[in-house]
Image 1 (cartoon, rainbow, N blue to C red):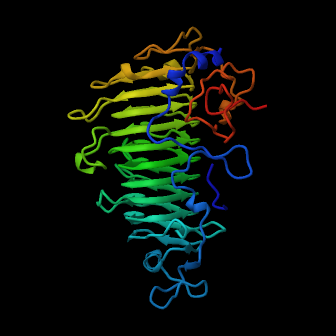
Image 2: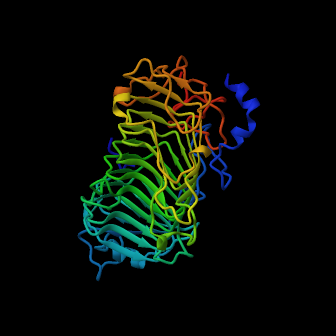
Length: 457
């Protein structure tokens, strides 16, 4: 659905505390804070919530009837281009683009707000703001404390939205929030991305829709190279070519939560990847990615929903995977010399519903990996076309999982994967420190249900 711009288990916990403690993705300890006045809500926010607490002191207007030479950015006398508006923007400015089709190819360096007075780039409050074309619709280098929201971006030949550190690896771009963006039809024949993020720290991608970027099994809807401390939540990612989300080049501490992935590319989640050594941030890292967390997402008709690729530690928990069409999981290593093998992945509390006829294997394991370090536990596997299915072939023994019991989705054909109290998945999970809220932002019970949705009454 297009985004509108208007906006037995309790015992296990007792006897296996070490396992449960070890099921965190590692790294930075997160504090999970519900929104004020509610009992449920969003998880750890790596940006510190600056966008929600901001004070904007001035509005700067951009419209096709404006003029970059004689305009002053007021509503009565706007600028013509976003480039001009960003040239004069200072902390506390809200740059508002009119509900018209603006030309892409926008580039600015050093757009910098502050924690208390960020710079916002926003579409018209009534919707209808489009940035069309250019190599990149928008590219910002070395940006700080910026909010980009309520804009449609389309038809760029390179990337839809490009945020980078300007090649200054020791001074990353940081504290950027992306909200309610619709990015689509970017590139056509290769490695073109919806969002290209390189050297970005402390960021949030929230409630965006991204589709049809790249081509020929290349390009990503969201591509991260050397990015750290980010959350990707509540997005609709579909019709990908290469990947929906890729985290590589020493990307670390990313929380991927309550997104919907549908027909999202050759690898829906590429947890790692293959990066030229010159582009690693930090330089000298011996991993493509580490400490990634994937919680309460829905995957529909994806060729390979979960790919661990040169990744050191990734928790994939409480996701619902429906009708994968080649593999469920891949464990791969694409950069070998001087790098640790792909290791320490965890696949826990997930629901997988599939047709055996669509799969070449359940888990594809490539060379130069360490599959013996992986954990598979408390998953539900249900084959629609093989009533005698007795469990998947995995590289290590799976524990406490459920085989060939229908999870009882509310209406899978209509994309409704809620479960009821009578589902075998209800209360069948183990409690994990990095899993708090489900796809609907409801609190997981203790013990939790399997999959992306806690039991509904």
